[in-house]
Image 1 (tube, helix red, strand yellow):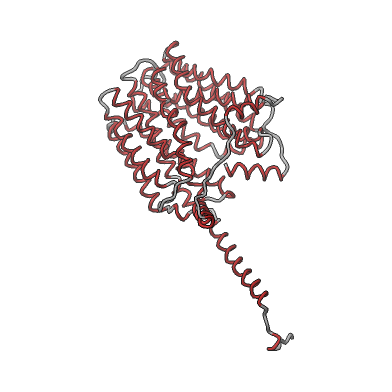
Image 2 (spheres, rainbow, N blue to C red; image 1 turned 180 degrees about the vertical axis):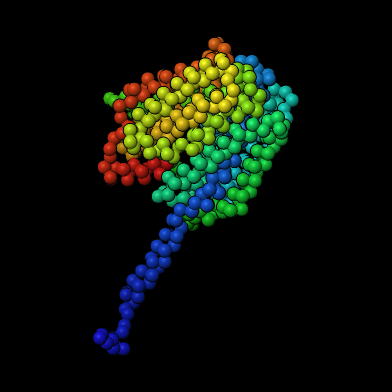
Length: 466
C-alpha cells in the first residue's frame, strides 16, 4: 500500500500549468476528432448546390439545340451557340471563385453567390422556352450562362470548406454522384415532352433548383465550416483580411514545361484528352437534332437519348474503378476509347436504318460504360505524369485548359463537319476524334509509375489541396 502524507500532497505552480495545458489539449483533440468526422448526410446536402447546376444544364443541352434549329439550319452555328456557356464559364468562373475566397458575410463566403446565382439561373432557365424570337432566345441563353457561371465555382468549393483533406476523396465522390443524379433527371425529363409542355418542364426544373437552394440554406450554415472559422480566427489575430492567393503557373510556362520533357507522354496524353472531348462535346450538343432528323424520333425521345448514356455511366463508374488496378490505367482508357469508336460506328449504321429506341439504346448504354473508363482515369494519369507533387497544380491546369478548350471547339468542329457531310454522319464525325485520341494514347508510355509511400502521401496531400 502506498501512503501519501497530507503535507507531501503538493502541486507546484509549474506542474499545475502543465496539467492545465494537458487538460486543454485533451479537450481540443476530442473536439478536433469530432469535427473531423466525415458527415455523409451533410455532404449530400452540400451536393445540392452542384445538383442544381447539373439538372438545369442537362435539360438545356437536350432541348435548346432543338429550339435553335427552328432558326438555324447550320449545325456549325448551333454548335457555336451551344458553346456559349463554356466561353462564359472559362472567363467568369475563375474570377468569381477568387472573389468568393475573399468574401466575408454572415452567410459565409460561398453562400451569398449561391443565394443570388441559383434564383437568377432558375429565372432565365424558365424564360428560355417562352422566347418568341431568336434575339430573345439568345438573350435568355446568355444571361442563363452568366447566372450559372456566377455560382458554379462556389458550388464546387463548398464541399472542401466543410470536409477536411483526409475525407475529400469521399466527399468528391458524393458531390459527383449528386451531379450525376442531376444529369440523369435533367435528361430524363425530356421523355415527358408530349405529356407536359416544354414551358412546364423548364418551370419544374427551375422550381427544383430553388427548392434545392432552400434546403441548402436550411441545413448548411457555412459560417460554421471549419475552413471559414479558421480564416476568421487568423484574421482576428492578424487584424486584417487574409487573402487566399494561389500561385498558379501561366499557360505558356506550363506548356514550355511539358515541351522541354524528353519523354512526350504528357503532351500526347493532353492531345488525347483534347481529341476525345471534341468528339464527346460535339455529339452531346447535337444528338437531339440527330434524333429528330435522322432517327425520326419525337423531340421528347430525342432529348432523352443522353439519359440512356448517363445511367450506365452512374451504375458502372464505381465497379470500373477497380479495373485500372488489374490491367492499368492506360489500357483501361484505350478500351474505353475503342468502345466509343466502335459503338459510334455501329450507331451510325443503326441511324441509317432508323432503328427503334430500344435497339439504339444498346450502343448508347455501352457509350456510358466507355466514358466511365475514360474520364475517371485521364486526370489521374496526368497527375502521375507530373515529375513531382510541386508540379501537380501545373498539370491540373493543363488538363482543364485542354478539356475546356475542346468543350468550346467541339460543337463547332463536329457541327461544321456534319454540315459538310450531312446530319446522318454526326456519330461518324465524332468517331473520327476518338480514333485520333486512340492514336495519341499509343504514344503515352508512362502513367503507371510506382511511387514510394512517402511520394504517394506527398502527392495525395497536394491533390487534396487542389
